[in-house]
Length: 98
Length: 181
Image (tube, rainbow over all chains, first blue to last red; front, side, top):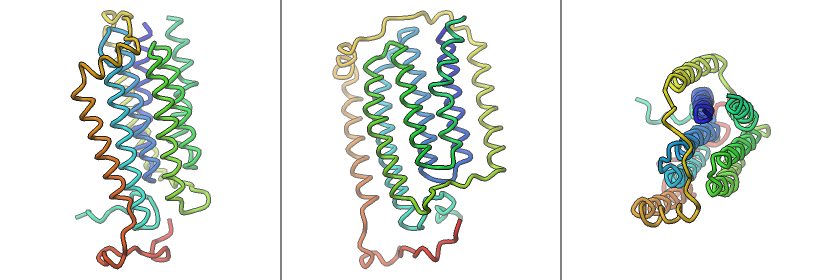
């Protein structure tokens, strides 16, 4: 059953993204990890559209648009962080810390 | 069964190794290019899943658009010449443990679940997909366009360079004040 293989690949991709989120400190590197995780979710959508006939393909298009919007806003925030602190490490973004 | 194994091996080469490189390499620019390779590999998997239109869109928007944006993001925020990201060693072990545990739970659930009900179905043609987008999911389509517009405006407002004399409450520290990392 190849559906299981695709699901396992997606699960692996998502886990790799989690690892990146937990270990990276640079904001752009975190955005890269989020991209990998979104990619895994899209792969599951397409796999279930192929096996079982779920309407997954339109949903992937919407997910793509949302991801692109997230990247645009995320990079704007990174630029702001860099301009204010001279670097884009997330340890520096601690103004809201109590 | 051999199909499954062959597919897994192909996926490891196309997607798995580049994805690991994305989160492990210390050079940010290289990480972005490994991400491009991951996304291209995913496009191949889409093609294998009989979604040719999505494979094309993946290459166009992700590899063409998002990766270019990321490259610009890295270039704009580059402070050191090497752009090497310091990774805390203790965090690395914890992150590997958490991600490994997550993968174990997810993989266990996938292997244990009976997936025999899911038989190969006919995937929509590009024409049917367009019909879906502009008929069945028309409201979601319009909301997505509003979301994209909002994101663009938000990005422009956030990244705009403000006149420092008009906003003295948030002075930009000079590079000497920032503690070296």
